[in-house]
Image (cartoon, rainbow, N blue to C red; front, side):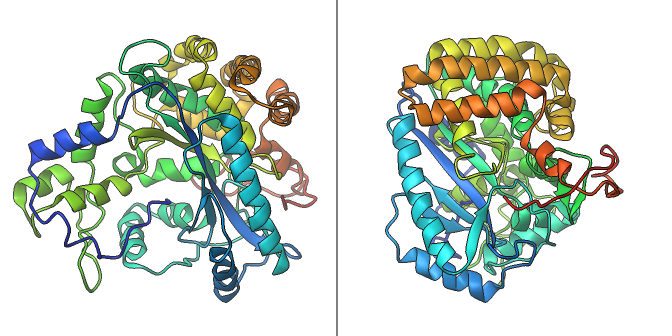
Length: 447
């Protein structure tokens, strides 16, 4: 969701129309840039809440004032705002895990201090448990996005305005085969992704009631639909598969230099190149189209893993960052993770993520699923062995070990802590997001 673009300023760039063949060649060339894994990044989305009364919505005026103050503060990470007012920090590419951790930690300390002066804080929850969707940003991009996603129901507005995540960015990998080859890393990202969904599920509530899903955020992505939020099939060469997916995915909007943007129905980018209507698509339109696709793993030259819920606690975010980095960038851990998740592939029934049974069960059950729990246990052990080889400090390894002991070893995920605090009489919500959870105790769900 951090792909902010100017509202029409780049519409005059790259005016020459692109053909279907040119689009395929461009996508193949820009979305997988191979080489030895050397850099790492993370994008952290946070819900912003009142420190005194987190259940009450923060007014747009208060949020705008806080963000105006933050924009004047020097940060190494990029600070952006999501459609519902969520805050996002995107690290610069780091040469090591610890460089990434140290940079983001320093920026988070600064952001938290500035927000605290206005009585605001950051909540690490994958989906806002208290509030209804309310858009903070009113720009042509988000007007068009809302109109497009509304065609499939309320999930789009929930995703835009109420969700938060930890997105880990990894180099695409070697051109050659092997544990660090780009084809292996592409496959692993989608199969290990289900384990990451289950282990870090942290969004079981909607409207203060359990939905029956440990990751309601992932449920919302599933309900948005495969064309907008799905992956391509994994049974082909990654570049070719992604290029076909880009061409066959629906166009969210046709931008204009003034006035509202057109939101066509059932127009794929391939059809747009062939018809040239309402106007011929350009390279700038292709670049923009790529930012409107939200698969669980998005190739942007590097791989952007988007399936992890925001995590609780001041340092909760660094656990999925460290575990993912270890399982992808350490050759021994990568091979062990590959062998561990390979049997799970039978459960996806050859359907692309997240719209397959494996991902659905990961989001619904978390680590209550025995096979996902076993896979998570092995992968966390492999990560803990690999982290010292990646230069991780005791702060990082201790955080990963504590998470393993508190959650993975017990078949739990952070969502279980939220559910344990619900009142014993609180029933699940009815409808597609309800029915799996029964009564829970409630104390306080602020994080």
